[in-house]
Length: 198
Image (cartoon, rainbow, N blue to C red; front, side, top):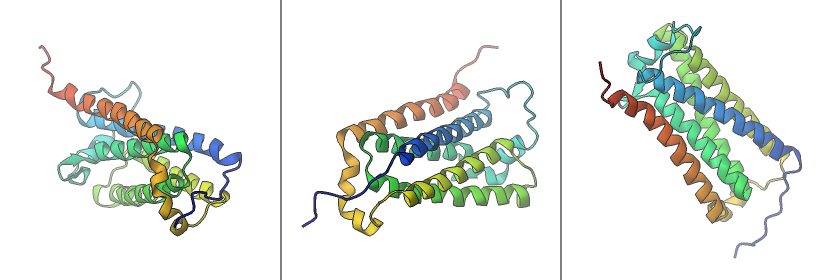
């Protein structure tokens, strides 16, 4: 039988760092969503932003996975991180905090590969992509540090408590954040399909 009580503490620092974590994830989502908008030609580039590199990278043969633009997949990644972070804010489950390590590690691995593609096969640097890579790396570092300074049991000890992630409030928070963010991303794509006069 699994004990209903987990012994752990976050202290004062982890919730503050988690606020920074959410801001960085939001920045990554905004950049990836904006890059998706550029990709879908739904947005003009802002005045003073030089498109050199960005367009070449996102429209290259490497700019798609299974026909989906990488910027779109990046926006979904950051949206997932934001949604999971929102769930943690609701219930502060240690399982969520530890689980974010795997999610952010995945982001770093993909970002490293995409940076390599820019430096190697593509031969162009996309400034927006580099901001996204910096954001994913920062998320991973913050995540590792929050786990390190928390007094959390090992993941093996936490595994029996996986249901603690799914409180009603946490699930609703996750669904709300993901739905709103996804509608924004889809709106960029929808704008390219809308009939425009002239």
